[in-house]
Length: 313
Length: 287
Figure (spheres, rainbow over the protein chains, first blue to last red):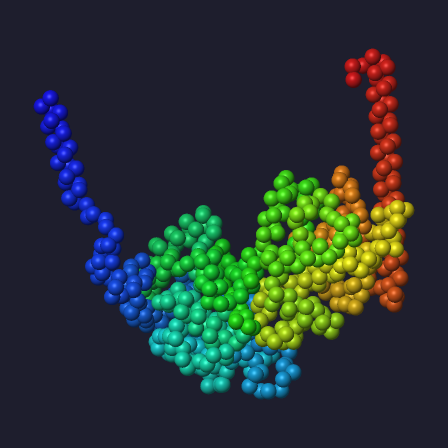
């Protein structure tokens, strides 16, 4: 009997303790609890690689990363992707086939050729390829590209490289520093082709950038984006993840002397939405999706997404 | 607006032979189409009345409306339809697509709407002509003069094959390029499925009701005749396609002859077999 009473008292005390430790859930306390959370109210968070940072800080942090990698950007791309990024970029440009093969029946000179906006294209990789394609394949010398980048160091790198191309100081190539989420200097309905290649995952607010792309594109204009994506084969994915998480930061450390930036790179790839999710985001911004909407490259390591602005919104 | 998959349709009917559960297959496909086209199809069925009831799908639930011949979105159809006008001059090329896009108020870059480029133009041509052939029979009564008990399925099939070939007439100088494009390894599956859809349509419209293995052989022979006639047609210089017509007639005669021979051989073998069994039994073998 005594043991039972002892047990009961023990039981009682433990129950009491639990009841005391638990914060009672009452509905009228919800708002107060939310107010008590210091982060939620003052600042929205976004991810910077695997860490969460306030939205206002991401821009400067990304900017620091790219300022640090700008000079060794090309060597590093070759080493990290084993040169495959060149094939991807060539395929991307070829599939878009920039430049008009047939001269317009409209003799209005300003409307000849395409007006291409290359976002986050600092080093000019895509821009020079597109101008080359338009000139050499389609014999179109009117197509022009505007390179926009948020980072002046990357733009400087692109300007340096443009010295070696025939487009230096021509009206076919221009540079612009700006944030893709808000580009007041570009008027509505003025761009034929909007490209963003390996850039959109660094944006703080991707949806805002997509909406801005929709604004600047002419009706019928095309949004084309190449970005790292999700590998669909489990076995290949294991190999790829091993490579990206162990080899890439190491290469970054050895070649560019900057491990953190490349650690960020692979983490940001991991955080980027899957093909289907990103297609949904493009659709949400008001674009028409052609066919499946994306094309996987090298088993889904990268994917090309496309959207077309409808004629009548 | 956007469809998850962009590929030509395979008709739902007759799937009973190739698919274990035809009804679930069909309903899943029909679900993909926009509700508007379904309603249009239903209205069309209602207006069709007695004529259509004769062409009711034989192995297909009448609750499912007819499937449209292709699965392109409105904008895609607009560009493709306009581009077809430029095919005689520019062929099945990106130039034709670009001109089509310009005609309809799109930009040069808008042909990105068609992920397969010029091959989409060819597929659209095939699918839309197939739709026109159906319309010619179901609405314009192409086969009405042949509607009697004495006209064989072969005769109607012949008429339909020739009718379909005539639709290729004004682009026939461009058709060799299109055939070359269709025979690229990556394009073969879609080209073949479109050919099967056409032969299936022709036999269905001709009133073929076979449910045995001849279902397959008939479709195979119609596909073979049509595909070879297309090649002949690209080199046919006679103004009214009389050479192609003669070719088709000969091939149909051939296939009929082969079919007859096979039938006789089958009968002969069956007879010999049953004789052998009877003989064995008469000798006291336990067969």
